[in-house]
Every structure is written in structure tokens, then in C-alpha cells.
Image 1 (tube, each protein chain N blue to C red):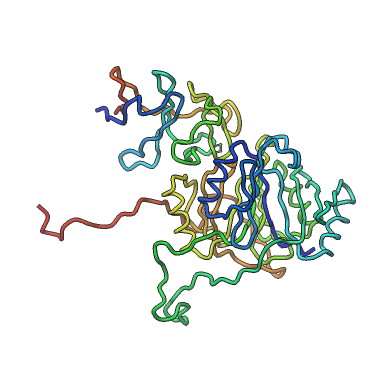
Image 2 (image 1 turned 180 degrees about the vertical axis):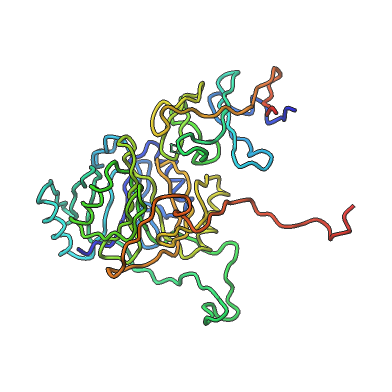
Length: 111
Length: 314
Ligand code: FES
């Protein structure tokens, strides 16, 4: 069953937003909006395995807004693929989270 | 050499405003802060100095681009400053500044400054505990906690750096600057105590690849575990992100609570650290989750058992 999270338009273009943790879990998920698309990952840095990346609520992007950054040791990730491009998690990728934008502009958690 | 401990850590950051907001929310007091940066002080005047990354007054950055730009050590007296200058001048450039401070780099390229310490003497009670069998530390009718009791960082406790060569880092601080190794976490690094303090450590190293060289975290001492828990809970409520803790380390016995930060490193509240002198024999154990802490908790939002009395629910 898909669970409603928010409207796509609740997130400004180019910005990130965290959701969860869900169902008693410990890990949040976050999405980055790019136009009408979103990219969703678990908030778990592959450098240490499962540590949260933002330094405050929703602060997942670098100053230029063109990469995801882990505040712990500065690893940088490609927004579209989750691949680490620089720093401590090189060779690793963020784990995609099952969040989708529906045709009527809603973000839902699947599963 | 009577080096007391870190007076300040100087950072060159991309977003001065975000970092300033963060440090104030953490509990430090802004002094002379504008859009170019400023000082953020604990109760005894030690603290963090922020500048813009490109500020020409900053020492050159490490080749990794780490935001930590200088570690400022407070020393007890002129004699120590002279001794440090003479010792370091044997194999590296030492600059004497107009204010009497001296500057050089360590063997890994971290910029150091030594100065007559600026720390103010604190006269504050520590956390007081009542325990059966021991005289009460809090008198009758004195309460132990209230929601908005003060919980301010008291002094800059320690800094932890990533270095590629632990042996070289340890040798420099021990052989050249008179630090003592209090304990060792194998395949991680040594806890180091300068001669002018009894604190278990003011400096610790973690071995990493060269490209990570920089600061892992810095910590401020709180007045006790209750202050640490309160300050951390308030920090979370303000929207900041817990990284590890609260818990209590084994080596050093200090309570800890680490947070993510916009300064490219973690920031820690600590409390109730062990004190040592030269009689202490260092312990050594391999680094592991078991060795790193006596216990570990995780924050949750306030909650209380509720609902109607048993049997009344409908
Ligand atoms: S934990 Fe994310 S970069 Fe180290």
C-alpha cells in the first residue's frame, strides 16, 4: 500500500526534504526534487554504513545545491544516481528509498 | 612543557552564517561576530573561531581542503612559550607574532599556535549526586534538575584528527611537546594529555587514508551528565542531527554525545572525564564497539506511559 507523504509542490525545486523514520525503524529517507522528478534515498551514509548524513533537518545538499553531502566527513554524492563522487565513500552509493511521485503530483512511500 | 590544552580551534568555512547559528545553538557565546566570522566562547573563554574559507588571515589549508585551519594551544607561562619555540625551531620555521604567540606546523601539516592561555578560571559547582552510603552532595531541599536549568559548554575539551601516520603523529606530540599517552585504541590511535592538565586527553588521532586528513571532531566539557543530556536534547529540538550517543566512553570515562555539523566534522558534548598524572600506565585495547563505550543510548521524543487505568479503557 502506498502511503501519502506530501505534495510534490510542497518541496521547492532543487531542494531536499526528509521523511520518517517509518514503522519504528531508525533510518529516515530523503528526497531531492529536480523539476517534476524526485530522487529518493535512505539517510544512511555508505562510508560508515548507516549513519545519518544531514547536519540539520533537510540539510542534505552542498551550498551550490548540485550534490548530496554527508556532513560527517564531507563525502559527496551525485543527486541522480546516489554514486559517491568525492571523499570517504568513494566506490559506494546511497541506497534508493521506495518513494515515488505519482501522476497527480503526490509523493508516496511504497510497500 | 606546561601546555594546558586547546584555547581555540580556527575554522575556515563556506557558510559562516550557518556555522555561526549552529555554534550558538550548541551553547557557545558569540563575541565580535559579523558576516566575516568571529569567536564563539565557552564559559571560560576557550572556543571556536570562524572565518571565511578564503580569509587571507588564515594559515594555509591542509592539501585535503579540511576546514580546520589552526589549533591554538594555551600554555601556562612565557618559559613554556620559549621552550616550545626553541624546540620546534630545531627543524622547522617558527613565527613569533607581535602579540607574543608563536606559530608552526606539526609533522602532518596541521597549523599550530601557542599562546599564554586566555582561559578564565571557572568557579562553578559540578553535578552533585546523592547516593546511599555516601554523604549527600546536594543538601536537603536542593533539587537536581529542572527543565530550563543552565547547560552551557564550560571549556574546550579536546580535538580529534584524522592522520595517515599514527606513529609519526604520536612521536611529534610526545617527543617534541611533552604530551603523555594515557591509553591506546589499537588500529585507531593514542589518547594524548599535555603536561599542564590532568584531563585524560585533549588530543586523539584516528588513522585514515591521506585524503581524509583533517578534523574528526572537537568536544566541550559540560558540568555533568545531566547537563550533557539536557543540552543534547535541546540541540535536537532545535533541529540538529545526533550522530552517536548519548553514551559513556570506557577510556577516559567521559559521557559523550556527538552531532553532525556544517563545519565538516562532528561536534561533541562531553562530561566527567577521568584525570591522570604521570603515575598512570597506559592501557591498550583494539578498537571495537565494545571497547569504545560502556553503554550507548539513543534519543527519542518525550513520551510517558498513558491511557486510562487498566480495565477502564473502552
Ligand atoms: S559517514 Fe558519511 S562521509 Fe563519513
